[in-house]
Amino acid sequence: MTDMTLEKQLNVNKFIVVINRHKIKANRGKPIDQHEPPVRVSAGKHGKPEYRYEAIFDCRVVRVIYDPEHPLPCGATTWVEIT
Image (tube, rainbow, N blue to C red; front, side, top):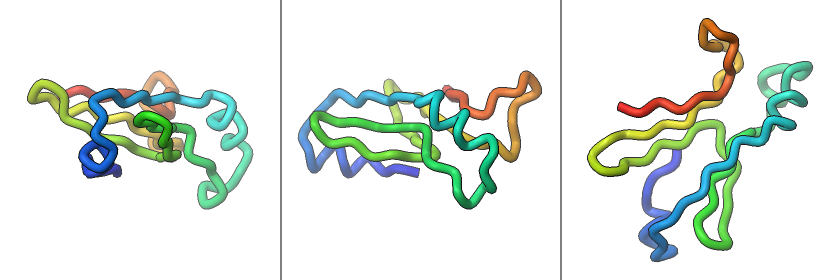
């Protein structure tokens, strides 16, 4: 999980979260310990690959989750939860 100190360090107020479907597909045939993170969080010119990302926007928690061991009933292995 990523903490929000990156936002303070970079002094940016825009984050971009990208889900790379090609990495999700490539991970399917690999053992879980060899999976590459399919979620990339970018702030300005800086980006970091992640398995999970959590942020708070307008008093709501937004989570981007990649969990191939526990997919949703529809089969999705990557999803966004807003609480």
